[in-house]
Length: 339
Ligand SMILES: NC(=O)c1ccc[n+]([C@@H]2O[C@H](COP(=O)([O-])OP(=O)(O)OC[C@H]3O[C@@H](n4cnc5c(N)ncnc54)[C@H](O)[C@@H]3O)[C@@H](O)[C@H]2O)c1
Image (cartoon, rainbow, N blue to C red; front, side, top):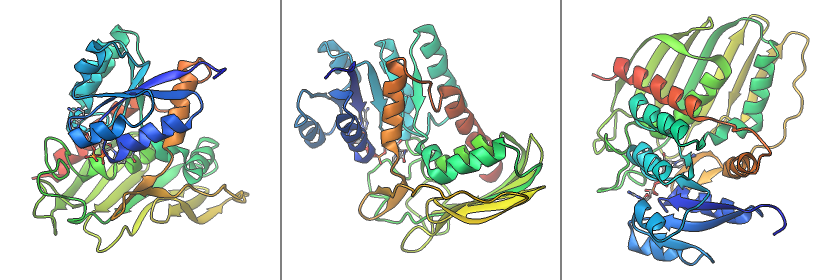
């Protein structure tokens, strides 16, 4: 390999951890050298990758003399901050799957420590790379819609007992935290990225048909944007059979746009003064987990960004401050909509 190689560790070798590993291996400049996974079968599976050793804990990996340049934390949400801190203590850079943590306080601790040990923290917000998101960001930043009046986010997904398995972490308060963290944080991130922070939050939530989960499956929320304009969000994982839609509607002074589809991947409307929408490149398909589907399969962009930053060729696409901001917004929404 002529270009500088970046070595990766993967902590948590489940659905998304395996995807991270295959994206790293598929990138000519990345190599997975260590996997941390408590499950014996998955550890054995990880060791099938050439040059990769698997361990039960983060510390065991470092104690065995394996010190990856960067370690991707792909475990249940409730462990993200704790394990990211362990990685930073051992002086590797860290990539954290969404959400960064379940509280602003624990996300802040990761940032403080990363600054002290001079290591980078990357967040996984791969929906920002979708052609529709890139296009929305460009027209808003160019001011084409003028003042923003109203923004509406709709997230209607299916998560049923094919997803919430007895004994699993999904659906628990301490490891999952709620549908806004696990299913919809990508869309809150997109709204924040486009329109900024929110205030004056009101709303309510309920659990229609997920008796096994510790939290709501549905909510309606309204708020003001600190930059002006009002917004609302409807969300539910109680949609029958399959995901219905993830959409954002933006009503501005000089035009309105709506991006929808199951994964916020289609421009449904664009009526903007003196503007014709360009042809957008096709979106990547959603992550497919068999019985259910997730957000856009854009993880290769994240891995490329990590490699570019660590080889001095780029800047972090989603930094830790923005990751923490989204956690803080979700915390504030939950304070208002949960009993
Ligand atoms: N960016 C995305 O689109 C996307 C998609 C799916 C999941 N995720 C996120 O990825 C994370 C994992 O989700 P998943 O669906 O892969 O879950 P999963 O249950 O399939 O995998 C989690 C893995 O972590 C392992 N684990 C548990 N405790 C551990 C520990 N202390 N150290 C190391 N490994 C440990 C489990 O054994 C399991 O193999 C979650 O935070 C989720 O929100 C992100």
